[in-house]
Figure (cartoon, rainbow, N blue to C red):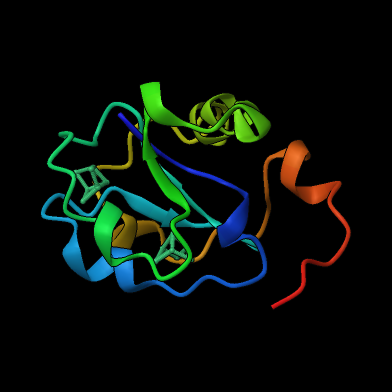
Length: 105
Ligand code: F3S
Ligand code: F3S
């Protein structure tokens, strides 16, 4: 799966959403999260993010390693909705993200 990391927090550019062929990039309150089971690893989202927040799971920079789990665990109580357009914005974040101070934009 691909993973969205800290540069997305409080920015939410959303260019990535347009690229995803399976609509598996979900909007939380302060960042977006990629569904680990719905992502088909097409990689189309990665180059369009203006702040390079998206990485293949094996390539997440060490300082943001926790974001692999953050993306996975965000869906713990959502299951597999089968498309972000069905859920719309989800008004919460993973605790790792919720605990961050406001990020400079
Ligand atoms: Fe975030 Fe980049 Fe997408 S800032 S919303 S991961 S284009
Ligand atoms: Fe979608 Fe990016 Fe995965 S475009 S299928 S979230 S690699």
